[in-house]
Structures are given as structure tokens and as C-alpha cells.
Length: 273
Image 1 (cartoon, rainbow, N blue to C red):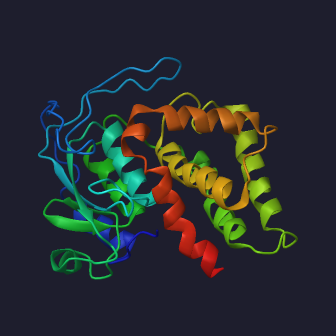
Image 2: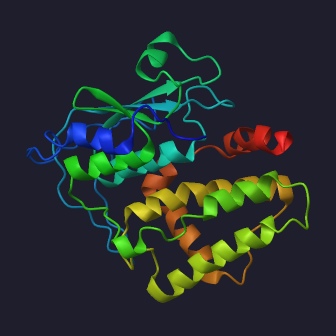
């Protein structure tokens, strides 16, 4: 479930500094592949209620992205929330991409050559394979700045502790160890932020923070619902509305994992303690 760490974030970003600011022609829409709902590019659409209308994006050949394959359904995208964050970024920037689905239980030799640790997500930029969703999304933002998905620095850490709190509670076998309360506290803090600043993390403008939080909240909802019969309390109304909004985005629907893959993906964590 975690992202790869082949080189430090700073080193990778420095390596790309000379190439990331190149100017490109205007975007052209490529036809969607008939063989997979996750290939090709998304056509620009508008959404009511939120200022998410896309600006022009640069022309580019489809970017190669390595992602986990589904363990329950052939030729479907798997359940990695960090990979979905990358795909959401590509979708919202209207960049065409080709997925290379990898069986992480039986990694092919070609994949291990470009990812010695055997982890995803991985993207090819400027003829180099880049790991780590943080590095990838920063690199995409620098190379393809329009439409901007930059989160203001003062809001960049909103909800950043939710995922670890979720994993702690999911793995817990002691109902009195405080892990549930830790998660509730983090969710309540996000709810308060959305109440004051919403409907999204950065007001009415979609940002990278939303694209990072969305997949994690999606996994939280499915995994805790299945393994602990637990759901986000109705008292956190702003958070529940936020989740509904993010989960309904066209880009999210196109890149989300199957429910059964999320359940199976977390099973070893739950059973292993």
C-alpha cells in the first residue's frame, strides 16, 4: 500500500529542475481506449457548485504509469490509494496516460528493473521512472502547471494524520486502546476545517490536498465498514458531505478501486494485527 522510495524527494526534484518548466503546446484530447476505462485522457467537463472548470493543458504523449492490478477482477486497477492520488492528478490536469497494471504478488522482471523495491505508483517523466506519490504529484505540478492543483501552504497539512489514525484503528484488537478516539479526533478536525473553509480543503477550488485525502477516506469508509462495522458519525456532517462530493467526481469514479479489492487489500493488515 505504500509508495516506493528509490531516491530522496529532494534529489529527484533537483534532477528534474532543468526539464520541468519547459513550455508545451495546447492540449488536445486523445480518444479513450476501448479496452480499459483507465487509459487515454478525459474530456474536459464542468461541474455545478464547485469551481473545477479546467483550463488548457499541454500536449503530451500518454504518460506511462505503473499501478497495482486488481486481485479480484482481471485487467482492472487495484486498490492502492497512493496510485489513485497520482491518477486523479493526471485526470484533473487532463493529461493522457497509459496504465501498466502489475501483479505485485508475482512481479515481472521488466517491472523490477525500473522499480527494484517492487512498489507502486511509478511514472515515466522525461525518460526517467519516478517513484513516490509526493514526488510524482509535485513533478506533475511543476511540469504541467495548468490547471493548478496547488494547495496553499497553510492548508497543506489538513487531514494529514487521518490515514495513520485509520490504520491504527483498523489493526486494533483492543476497543479500549484509544485508537478509535484518535481517529475521531482527526476526522473532527477535518470536519471543523471544512465547516469554516469548505466545501473543499481550499474553499471551492479543488486542490492536491483533496486528491490525496479522497482515496484515503474511500479506503477508510470501505475497510472500517467491512471489518469493524464502523462508519463516520452523522455528527460530522461537513466531512460526510465532503466525502460524497469527492467520491462523486468523474475523475474519482474513473480511478477508484473496486470495493472487493479494498477489502482484500486490507485483509493482511487486519489479520496480521
